[in-house]
Image 1 (tube, rainbow, N blue to C red):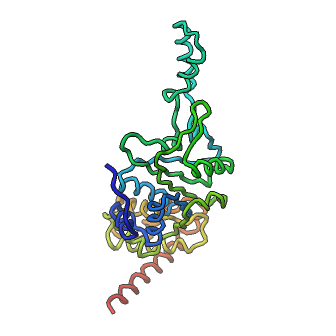
Image 2: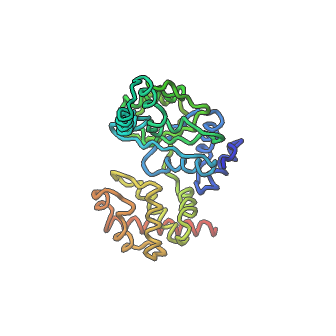
Image 3: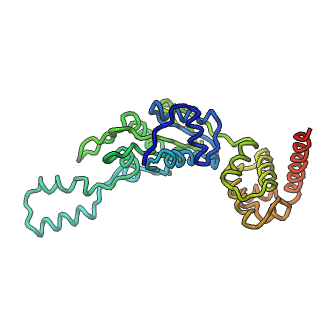
Length: 311
């Protein structure tokens, strides 16, 4: 069952919070404007900061179907929009020939019908049936595609319609809610960005990251959560090839809980650093004495904050 769209920024923030997504007000504002004005939302940021999760949360909170197009190099129309089911068409031709069908025009019309059309994510997102509300269309990691596909997507998002030569133009009765994400491995063309509202999804500060851990990893002890968040915050200050995102923080919290840790110690870091860091050079740079120094700074900082709160 679909739910009505939020009427203001506060309701948008509540909608995200209800699904366990801890957002700041700037994100809630641009998301509200996206829903209110029907513009695509372009989310850019490092991998693992929660961009994709926003579309999933919207789908769950609004009760709408999520259609996901996962982008990759070489993505083309047949994978993203539609293609014809050639094996079924060939079988239909053989059956028609066996039945003595002579009318080629009639047969051609039957072959290029909805029955033989394989609908890929972009076409699925433009079609709604019955009383169904328009879906959430997630175009994930657009920066992984080639520029020609980006240009094609620009045309689709301009009019929310797709032309199929054998069938004509299919246009959305109500445009989908479009969320586009990019990890910024390459720049997306300004022409596409101009058609979207833009928001940079940054790494969370310590306070917000702590709130996220409490919401998503409630079984972690208070001490473990504080030390873990502080440690990850310090890791992001290091010269690493890939800084850990919030996804890695949550994975690490889950891993430490499963191993029955109630606090971080050097052995815990040694055993599980591969959960939070994903490149061997980064792991080698941090493990051992460097990890111990970071942990010492983390504990000192937590103690200092505790004394400050008492004062």
